[in-house]
Length: 238
Image (cartoon, rainbow, N blue to C red):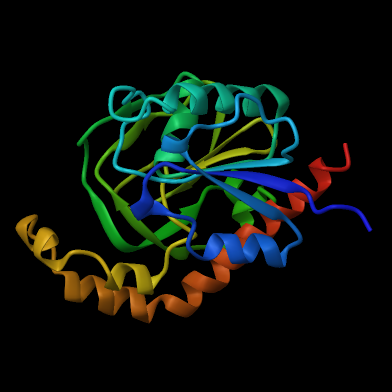
């Protein structure tokens, strides 16, 4: 019996952990190896067949606040160079974009919070991972920073009504997402209602919408993660 392929899962903030992503990867025969950035990251992806970079309220170059981003960016470049199956979520996607020559701006554009409809582009509908969103799918969002320009080598895979750059791919297997397939209505329910109210956001309304979208969100998110895991299993055979 062969060992399961391993995926490095980088936690950039304790509030933005892997949630249901860990369970789904395990169900797909992939061993998620969780590492908190503040505890130090490996210098190389040796021994890993996949990479996941999670979210956090940081900019991709916030070195004073998060010094481990130096290493995370090096790992990102290695993943791009070697076309390692990679899923960058929110901050993780912004790191990919920034490292590859795109542009990320802080507190820019309309913030997206709660369940938001994501629509694949033609390229996204043909992508082995993003095609599992179908014609459209509700995904959880919680961001105020924005990828304003994709890297030159990137292919746009999905958009939303307010934000164009919701998902992209570099090479065949490196993907960045602005949305959170690991998050669900349960997580929205735990958000700080008072803090959201100060921003003019009705937390109760976000919960109602996320609850209504739960089944569709979970089905699309689970299928997306399953397809990503399949790429990790294939990479492990190389």
